[in-house]
Image (cartoon, rainbow, N blue to C red):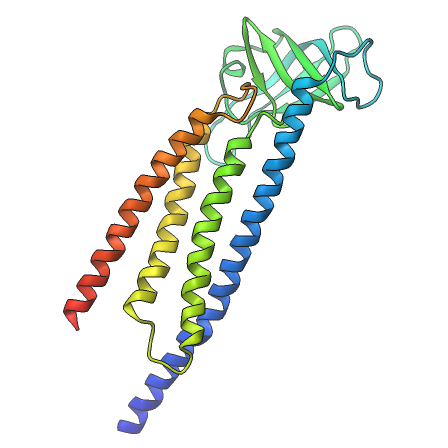
Length: 253
């Protein structure tokens, strides 16, 4: 019986050790994702500056150009958000030539939700894409515009970097203690904190991203401050919960 119990314990320990390897790879993947989001943010910021400083085209561009042109369109096939996995889109058609420009958007507002099929809008064309529509004194960026999601990219850098580093640290700690016991209380708290910060960070991103102004001349600092406040609160709660779990586990031993 003692031998069987020892074999079971050894297999359990081996399972914990092997499980640390994919966790380590996930952590490394998250750090790589953070680096990619940082590069995307930098590229989108450069594009935002290029669009902001772009001159007006002297004539309607026949091919993608670094100048901007304002074109009148008729809007139709408006698709607003209808729940999970639904897209937000509309078709823009030039009144005279009948050329069609499909467009997609991140949010229903502030303009798209007020429009009806057949309404006239003015679209800003840049580098071959409609990057913004305007009507009734309001405007809204399309998904092809560098105005959209720049602050989300920056928030993603933080969320993936923090959780990724914790997963790499925790799994590396486990692998260094390859011949040791089952995961310690500290390891479990590190893994729990990584998951909590990831889920909480994604939730903070969703809330802050929904408030972002897509026509701001720069990254929306208001949305970033909201993300920082929410993520800071999540971090405080997560650290406190991890500390309480650690103390509770220590007392139960």
